[in-house]
Image 1 (cartoon, rainbow, N blue to C red):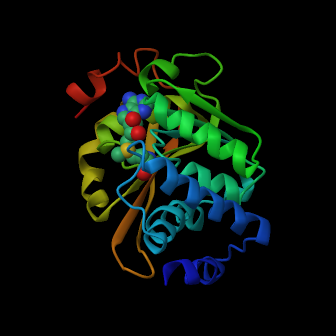
Image 2 (image 1 turned 45 degrees about the horizontal axis):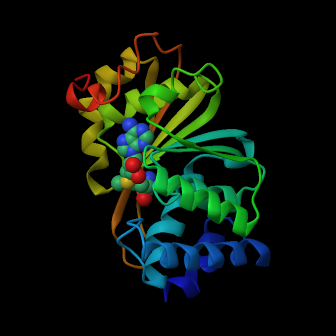
Length: 238
Ligand code: SAM
């Protein structure tokens, strides 16, 4: 059902996909299911569910932020490619850097990108805490994205250092995301951000709730951040 309604739901939000883009989603789905048999990529493998809970869900961020005006995006902890690979398929002009600390997931994503034929995408195996210290990545992106990686105080330390001034960090959360707003205030101001808008939505078919929290980068992140790997999670800035 969800697979069938995928394009209709997206069109309602003003996003039309070409036959070529739909073919890319189809190939991505088949590769995800095939590779998931030999490695742990996702608990969701049924076609309708993948289309709604992974593909459509990843694209919801574009309902609230205009990706036609965005150039450089980084996705921290992308796992099997969410949200950045669906976004890259829907917005082919984007220059995307996809980060994950698990090498086998990066290997999978490289295979998908080659198979479905996308360019201007770079895969990086590593921890965000270390990659954010690289000159070519620090404060370089219009948008940093993360879905289902950590709670807001931790996630802010992992993502905000990559965002350039006037750029945005968009955190994709479940129903309880809005509750995390309170606990992240200190981390956000300490890392050079300020709260932007927060959005709530429901997935159109199975109706589970989602929230998207926006943080705007207003000044440079102090050199002390992010702290060394593991420290943001062990001693969150709260
Ligand atoms: N974003 C994907 C999604 O929504 O399906 C994957 C979510 S998965 C629960 C979290 C991913 O973040 C894992 O693939 C993990 O390897 C990665 N990860 C966790 N901490 C990280 C860090 N500090 N740096 C880079 N990747 C990290």
